[in-house]
Amino acid sequence: EQRDLKKLLILYNEKVSSNQNKIEHGIKLLSRRHNQEMYKQQQQHRQICQQRGLPEQMTNAEWAQTSQQLKEKYRRQMQEFNNKGEEVKNKCEQDFAREREKRQKSHARRKRDMEEGMEKVMSRIMQSFRQQHDRYLKRHVQRINKKKNEIM
Image (cartoon, rainbow, N blue to C red; front, side, top):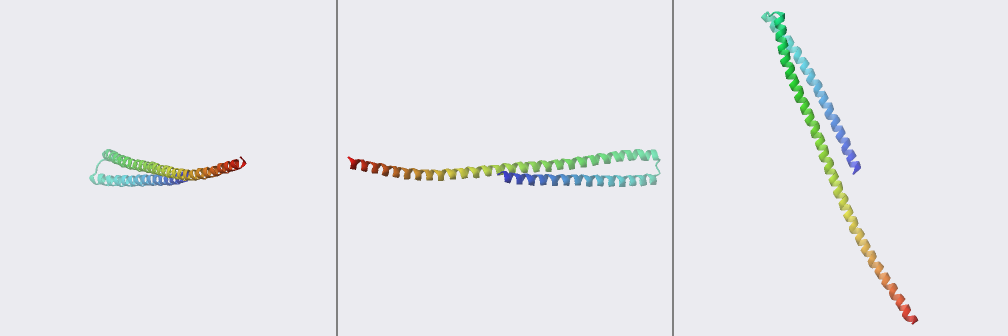
């Protein structure tokens, strides 16, 4: 049972590590994509403002508003990604707990079955032993009585 649970724990740890690596990788990709999109949006904004001939102060104010909206969008996306990561972690933990419980019940059932089988075998052996003991004791008593009767 312990060996089986150790294997399960090793598999669980590998799964957790894999999930954590995937989450970290996903965060890096999402962050990189956000940075690229922010840079692209900034370049586009500058071009549009130059084409429109807006003063730099107005351009900066518009960009501040646009960048704030983008940052809020990125924050929501990152939060959603982190929430999904937590869901994956929780599911993994629940799967591990469910599998551990299932294996423990299975081991307990097999152990109980084995003990019941051993009790049946021991009962048969003891019954046979008692029968044999009773026969020998009866013969012994008969011999003693026979010898006793011969002496008298």
